Structure formats: C-alpha cells, structure tokens
Amino acid sequence: MNQRLRRLLTVASATLSAIATVAGCSNDATSDTPTAHASGPGRFASPNPGSVNTYWIQAPHGLVLVDTLRTPDDAQKAIAEIRKTGEPVVGILLTHSHPDHVGGASAFHDAFPKATVLASRATDQAMRQDKRGFYPLARSANPRFPARLTYADRTFADGSAVQVGGLRFETIGFSEGESDRATVYYRPDTGDLFSGDLATGKVTPALIEGNSCGWLQILTQLDRRFPKARTMYPGHGAPGPARALIDEQRGYLRHFRGLVRPAVASASPGGPAVTPEEQKSITAAMDRTYPGYPPVADLPTIVQENIKAVARELTAEATTRVPAPCADQTQAGTGGSASPTST
Figure: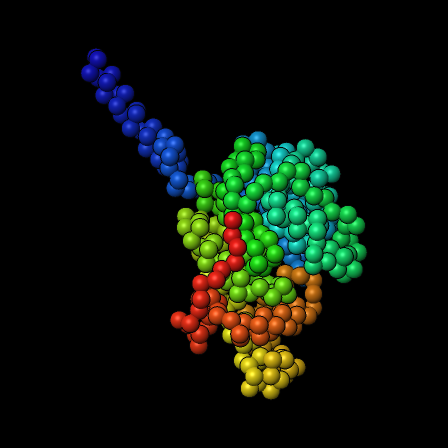
C-alpha cells in the first residue's frame, strides 16, 4: 500500500510539473527568460491623420497605461474603451514630451485621479521647459490641444527600474534622436517593449528635429540593450516583433538619408539647398518605397519638412566624421564612433 501511494504521488508531482511548464510557470526566481502571456496590452489608436497609440497593461493591482494621446477629446474615446475592462487604472507612463503623447493627460488624470503619472526626470524637465516651443505650436494647429499640461506626479532617473501596479519595468533613456529625450519601458517577464516613437509601425515619422543620425545610433543601442524583447508596442502604428520594427525603422531612416544626400551635394543643381524639383523627386521615391504610410502628425507637408531638416543635418555632417550606423553604402567603413547619449 505504501509503495502504491508513493507511485501515485510521484505521478501526480510529474503531472503538476508538466502543467506548470506548459503554463509558462517557473520556480526559478533567477530566470530572466520572458514567458508567454495569454493576451497582450489593450490599445487605442486615434484616427488618422496623425494617429497615435495609448496602451493599457493588466497588472496585479489594476491597469498601467502608456502615453496619453494628443488631446483630451482623443483621450475620452480611449477612456471609454478602458472602462469596459472594469479594472482600475493605477499608473500612467510617459515615453517622451512630444505633444501627441502628453496632450490627453488631463483627461486621463480626471478620469482616474488615483493613478500616478510617471515620467523620467529628463522627460518631465523637457515638458516643463518646452525649449522648442512645441506646445504653443500644437495649440495653434489644433484648438483642442490643452491650454495647460498635466505633469508627472512621480519622476525617476533614466535607467532605473520602475515599480507600478505590482509590475516591474526596466527603463533606458535616450537623447538627441526622434525627440530630445525619450524613455523606453521593458517588461522582462513578457518581453514587451514600449518604445514610444523610437521604432514605429509602417508610418511616416517626424524628422523635423534633424537628428536622424542620432536616431539611427539609438536603434543600434536599443537592439543591443534588450536582446530578449519579443513584441514592440510603438507610439504610432501596429505592434509587432521587436527586431522587425527596429530593422524597419532603421531601413526607413537610411533610405531617406540616402535620397536627400545627393540633393545637398555641392555638385547638385541647388548645391546645399534642395530645389523644388529635387524635393518632388525625393517625395515620389519615398511614396514608391513606402506606399500608404500615414503621417505621425496632422501636418500635410510633413515629408517636405522632413526633407528640409535632414538636408540641414546632412550639410552639417559633410564636415564631420559620420558614425557607422549613419553611413550609407558610399560611406561604409569611414564612420567614427560618436553616439548619442543614453543613460
């Protein structure tokens, strides 16, 4: 009888172990391998043109949101979807200071007053200083953009881990890329990577800050920093495999720079100035390669503004060593090692 009981216990133990393995459970507290989860974050995308995402993540103590859309009106539509979950919102993470990601914060704060708004110290400072004057520009272009911003309740140092709602996020901060400052949030337990605008899904990005080279260097660092990232949740466009979205963003930037570079060469028709004919040619070439890519901003001339900004950037690069991630085929092997700041 005792031997039979021992056999039954052995079989039961093996069965439970197998079930735990299939469910992605582990008793190894030191394991850093992401495990599969039944459903990913919820997502609301505001309408085009200028569609932008907000996400909600199921945490042990409620929902954690990522970014707050462009306007309180857009936020109200997302709030209606979030309320359908029946879950409380316990935290709101901000990825960067651009107007289309922070403009709806007041509506979220009013709807979920107990939720803590979190941002890196660098992002919070960028919002408060607004050195580029983006917020007045956003108000002039869209009267629904708020007259006053809602700032973070809690800030943290770039690179520090963030605990919110019972979840742990790893962070890394970048500067001089798509935006002056940017924070990426990573869930090591699932491999989910919330990238803000650093890698977006099949959209026309904004390059108006003229830091395409810095952006390319950041993508290289991002790829290396989170090698186990599975799914990327971008600020614009659909989520997808992290490596694929990083590679796609890298390819887009390199292709764009490769088209603009000949237009600012000294032997080009306009010299360092891009002529209207060159601008039309570049725009047509991008449309052929990336057809139907909606703009990330409600700006009809976004491609033309991108051309102007990158033209100025490439003209300045002509007198410096180009870092390897930014070099096109004609420059490969001649780059230096300069890189944008990450913390």
